[in-house]
Structure formats: structure tokens, C-alpha cells
Length: 224
Image 1 (spheres, rainbow, N blue to C red):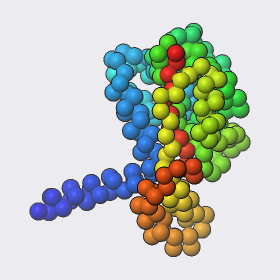
Image 2: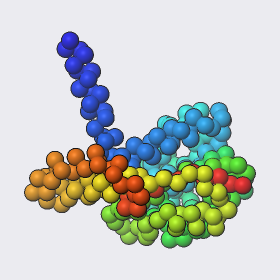
Image 3: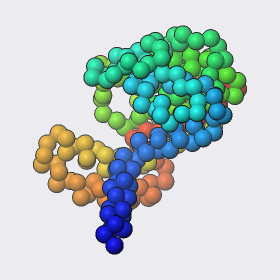
């Protein structure tokens, strides 16, 4: 009985981060779905890879991590495969079977040019998994330039010659309010009084059908 209780407690602890960090959990699920869809040996570009934290999700593919290494001074960029500006990727056209750009597009000054470059190096039929913020605090300043709406993403992807297969908001207004309240706790301890409300709000997120107020968006787009 003790063992069963302990296992149940562990499952509860495991679920709690997904409940709170819904955007991040959706990104993880999308990464796993992409990995499962790729053939063994497929070549994958992580454009804006940071520390290459997504490498482990693609053990059967050739994962190529590229970053300019200016985002966070405390990060370890030693595992990058290429140090490069995403506006001028050092690869021939039609090189990659798929690409990632995960919460990176807000950190580039020319997002259209970056998406065009990613499209250039994708093979015909290759897919891009994109995650971008909308309602998000300034981070990694001074290299934090943009936030993205659904129409804005559709426009940029279309301009890059990519066809949107799906584009989804990462939750609605109640999950957004929950995250903002939890972020307030970092500002001042007295905001911890909001924690019970913050933890309850995601339960109401199904009431927001339009989801125009969201933390961000995930999208998959394909090169024609």
C-alpha cells in the first residue's frame, strides 16, 4: 500500500508542471509528434537552438543545432553544430527534412528574412515546427523585438513560401491570467496570496472559445 501511495504522489507531482506550464508542455508534445513522424536518419535543423536542449527528443534523426549564441550569457553554447545568424544560414538549399524554431522568432530583427532562410534550406515537403509568444514578458533583452498574432504568423509564413498545416493558441485568457499571477510572485512575496486563484484559473480555460488572449502560438508549416 505504501508503494502504491508513493507512486500516486509521484504521478501527481509529474502532472503539476504540465498543468502550470501548459505552453511548454504543448511544445514538448509537438516536438515528440514531429520526432515520431520523421524517418530514421532524417536531417533536422534547430534554428535558434540555444543550448540544444531538444537534441535528446530526436535520437533517430540527424539533429543540427544552429544559434548566434547571444541570447543568454549563462548558457552553454559549446554543443552547437554551427554558430550563425539565422538570417544567413550556412547551408545549401533543400538540405533539411524538417526544422524547428522554438520561441526564437521574437529574438530576431528580421523575422521574415529568417523564415525565408529556413524555407530555403528545407527540402520540398519539409516541415517547420514554430512556437512564438504573444502575451509574454520581455526576456533576453536587448534581443527581444516582437510578439506575434495569428494573422501576423500566417502572413510571415506565407511570405516565406510555407503553407500552414495547423496553427493553434497555447491556451486562452484564463491560462494567461494564471501565468501572469504566478509571475507576480517573483516580483514580490505578497503576491503569493494570489496562488490559490492562479492555480484554479486554468480549470476555466475551456470557457474561452476564441482564445485571442493567449501566451503564444504553435504552428506547423510545410514547404511546397
